[in-house]
Length: 395
Image (cartoon, rainbow, N blue to C red; front, top):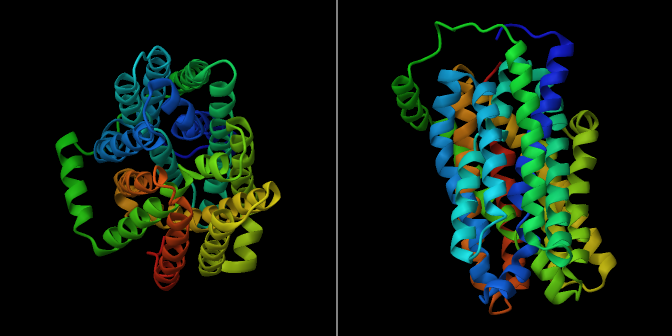
């Protein structure tokens, strides 16, 4: 694409932020619906959680394809097509008449949505110098966090009022708007063919080469573990608030928005957090906050304590996760699109595993014990990342 002016960079970040907002809202919108979906389709909450796990599984698998596609055809072009597909799939999802059909459509949504946030991160890695990258990724993260907050709240609100189908109708409209704006902006871009762009088969072979790199493997390993622990717990936090704290589905979704508020608190002050704590300090503080937040949620009582727990968990997770995101953008600078999508692949393989494991504890009333296990695991993971995070490749 060539060098961007500050105004061009800002416009692209805004459009990618809108697409990321819709993508993350779609990813989390079913979390607060699980109880209602179980009741409507006459299955347990654990069985209804298939709509969450299948999204994560397919989202992770498709990363293996989007990385090479982004390298070959251009990251922004692939993102715009993925957003367009999400608009169509969301509309069809709203018409699902059975749980199996809903699960299938959530799989298609995961397949399309997989091409949005990771390739947007890779684009930032291509366009923004390393010294500004943490702050820029945090700005992009602000949009995705808002999307997560909106998805968590509106999923519960729609399920409790207008019906869960209304949530997917609104998602379709947002995706449609993002698609139109992105495609219009890309048409204004001068079309150039990069002679350095790899052939599609060469791009796929590059994936195998990256997997043979030790740095890529350790980033993927810790990211998969993070996904299994934190995202696995996140999917059932609204259920726990509903069952153990006695909150309605809407109220549980509203409390869960504080998780996203914690992420916004981090992203809006990313430069200051980094200056105060450094990369390794962010890892240590983030892991501690997640662990304490989950323990408070698991064993506390009272809405205010639940609210504090969600806020702490969100702030801690984004301290930890954004640091890993920066490492992902730098682990293979010559093939950043493929590298970042491998990062996302490992994250969502981990999430799907975590959701499947956590689902076993829901129907038998063991969520509090599962959250405790996750808290211990996050502390151990933080210790591993703390030792390794300073060893990034020089830009």
